[in-house]
Image (cartoon, rainbow, N blue to C red; front, side, top):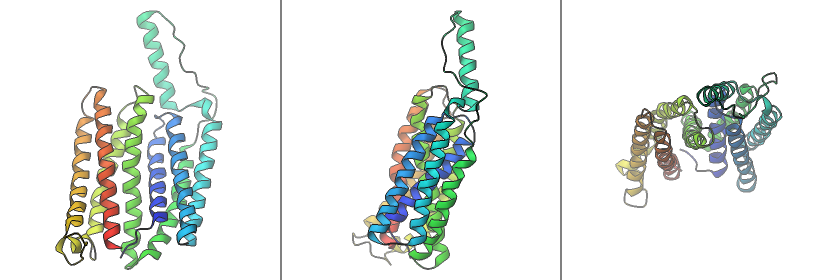
Length: 283
């Protein structure tokens, strides 16, 4: 029905995280350091998936895709570092506007972060290469994992989007400490994306044979049904935390962003419970 495979989970996580990095980087608002953080983190995660896959149970299309994700994420990271002097358009405009405002109010011309407006910027389209390669590996992993094939593939791909979106949202929430004054649009976009993916994730896990069979007792979870209800609690709680996070971001105080980040910390735990508990019980 499904397989709990560490190599596949790591490829899912890295592919989803890199895909939603593009969702953010295409806006040209968040500083380059955020992209460096995510490309490095998810690139290493894909590398770990490659090592685990080769060491435990090889699915060659998946392992080759993991290697491709590592190379593509690394290449995008190198290009971003080489072109760092250009910054990003939205950040440049915000820094220049803030500097001019401070000068007008105080008469003090403070030294601001400088960018080279004539230098070429990092092209966000490069962030699509790694997840496109990863997607091919996830399809192969889904085909190898179980039957019916369409359901296994769908669960694998949607799970990648679910884990990637919630992880990126949590990491971006922390980035507001590094880049004060950043608009809330990028974070709201990731929270909304996670809320849109959540129904697909839960419904696919309920499709027979799925978590409905665990909840009804047809599949014994070996703990008197506790794990099945734990899964249901994780699924419902994840949505609740996302709704509260979105409400928190409507508040005007800067502390609302930090409160939203704390909520996303909790949501990441329940989101992983939603995906991984189901995989363990249906394996």
